Image 1 (cartoon, rainbow, N blue to C red):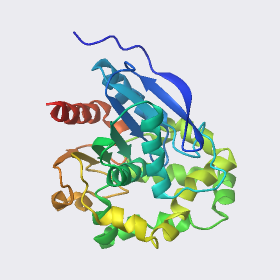
Image 2: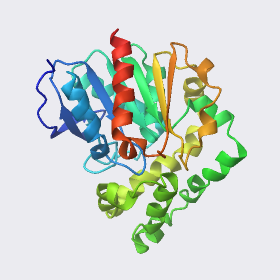
Image 3: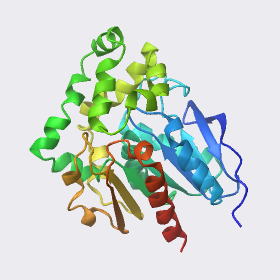
Length: 293
């Protein structure tokens, strides 16, 4: 019989100098699964997953990433990818677990890869969604992928926030529709648009991209990016993803030293966890069962 799983509860958790907003479900003594969202998204998108995980006896926690509502804004303005990874490791510590499985989508996937590279002793396994291994993504992008990623350049301009707010975030909403053509992203991501109406939160989200140029000049991040992922991994992508195309996920098995399970979800785009939640949840649970087996 599966354990009783009450609805997720919201709370705050201090870690790595911030106050993180968390959605938590499942037994406190269950194996920890930490879910990290991407852009533009929120911890609420993982609610179906953490409820499903809780029903299987896992302690499932969805995190509002640094700078995203209601998590606090970092006073030092650090939105580097390594800072995101250190947030994940710190949360494992402060949640009282020796290890966790990390489930990351988009920027959450970036944090997941780097956290596993930083502290493989604390990361039991990883599930990444919509992002291939970072070495594959950064060193072997196709010409089509470079074109898809041009939005990152647009986000570098300081006046971007003013323009987006003046247009009531419609350009971001259009971008999200391009990434997941089959999803009504305006409605599905309503909490995100509400949060971005606060300028400081929008700036925080864009700052993940603005931190990239400096990060890519750092030897530390390249050491982490170039190394094969040292823990068991499952990589999920939507076959209709307009942000990171399906061809970017080919030929990367050699970058996963402890094994790779690959899942392509038909009829889904970038936000496959919202478009096909049952299929996404089943893939995550199947991977977790294999880890436990």
